[in-house]
Length: 269
Picture 1 (cartoon, rainbow, N blue to C red):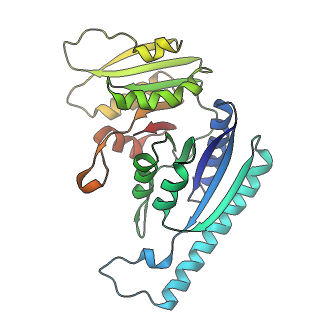
Picture 2: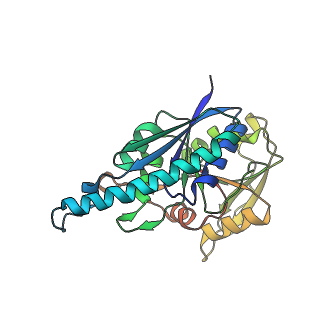
Picture 3: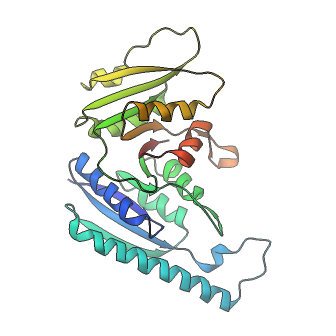
């Protein structure tokens, strides 16, 4: 049975690259259906509590903006679909984006989504948070301008905990075709050389271990720089956060990658 990849389309300019990334991910996992999703935000959801009641004129203007965006995204999908080697479908719905991504993402094998950005009504972080925390699925974060292919040289940010293992397990389907797999682990001064984690050995993955010193600098920057120096075209990592009042707040390395990663990142919370 083929898998399912949910591709959340938000910005028309980014949609072609995101769809290409979803198609390449489908290639890497041996085939999958691509379910592209356009979400139109209901006008009433754009009003913050401190604002006045939404007028009909304001609602019409917001719907017109959403319609123009959906038309552009649909055009990008239709331009791409003849090039797709896998079944692809498009859904265009009016909903709260984080709710529908959580619902449909939970029924997919992977969620493909663009890096968060700021916009007039806040940021895309609630959608990213829903994809990570509410679906229990790996997400492929695609930065602007990223182009396929990826997965030939993979860097894996490793911590000796369950979160890292959860991120690696779905990535095993990608790693079997990789020419190079690099495991990057941060260590404090005085730590001994570390062995390749058992999860790679158990699955026959020939991984190389790299130890990164944890110092006073931004470790996430060192992690990203090391991935680039190794020629990695994909970074795999666990997504870390804490949940005050049930709201996931991203930890330092996770948030840095959401903001600054310039290569595709496969994350799982």
